[in-house]
Every structure is written in structure tokens, then in C-alpha cells.
Amino acid sequence: MPGAGKSTVTRLAGAMLPRAARLDGDVVTRLVVSGQVWALGEPKDEAARQVDLTNRNLCALAANFADAGFLPLIDSIVPDRRQLDFFLELLAPRPVLFVVLAPGIAACKHRNDIRDPDEQFFFDGYEGLEATMRREMGDVGWWFDTSELSPEETARRVLAEAGERALVK
Image 1: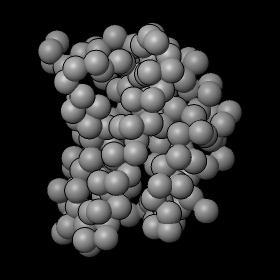
Image 2 (image 1 turned 180 degrees about the horizontal axis):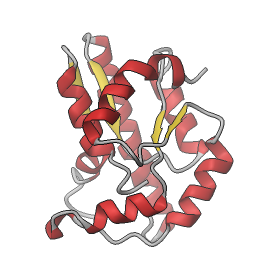
Image 3 (image 1 turned 60 degrees about the vertical axis):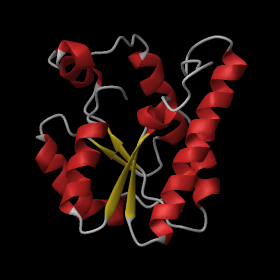
Image 4 (image 1 turned 180 degrees about the vertical axis):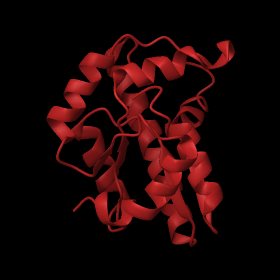
């Protein structure tokens, strides 16, 4: 979810690996410089089309980096099973580790509150997003409660444990 620590953890984890590439969904989304529609914006069909385009590009980059011997770390919100299945389809036959940083809504909101004001965001859909994610994907990958961990501890544990806990079959 927004504020879960995805950007910080993927940046730290990538730096701990000998060959890694961090792929930021927000950066890929911002490649559209004219006509961009926010993921939850209007018109909904165009917003969905642009989300799919971002995800398609993230997967193409991830596949290219993986095929070149780098571990791709995708920093993105995967809000539902349809989008997860889209990632899995585009990344096949490569193995996919799906780690959901799940510190809880209160922690996500707190982390946003303590960010630099220029980096803060407005999001009021936490409850609905969490409910959908848990209903549709609660049994997939590794739901990792990071609420009591530092970003460094989280990154180290992701690298140490994701191979066994997060593989999507």
C-alpha cells in the first residue's frame, strides 16, 4: 500500500545485491508527459489502460534485466489479482517472488505523515485497498508485517527469506 516502504526497501535491497535493478512504477508512470490519467482518475477506462501500460513496461524492463543477469526489484502497488496475474503472464517463464510489505494501515499513514512535505501524498482508500488485496491475494506470496522493523532490517529479511516465502507458483 502507499507508505508501506516499497521504495525505501527496494532501494536498500538492491544496493545489498551484486547485480540488481530497481524498477519504480511511479517513475515509469511519469514517462507519460501529456495525457496522463492517474490510476484512480477519470475516465476510468483510460486510467486502467495506462496502469496496464505501466505494468507492461515494468515487466518488459524486469524481463530484460533478468535475462541479462540482474535481479529486478519492482517497486509498485499490485492492488488486485487481475494485475498480479498480468505480471505473472508477462514475466513467465521466469520465477516471480511476490512480497507484500504489510505494516498495517496505521503504519502506512504514519510513515506518510513523517515524510518530507514535498514527498507526502494524499490517499484515502487504505481500507478498501487492503480489503481487496487480502480477499484476492491474501494466500499468494509473502505478506510481511514490517511494522516493527527498520527499512534496513526489512531489506535484509526480504533478501534472506523471500526465496522460500514469496515464490508464486
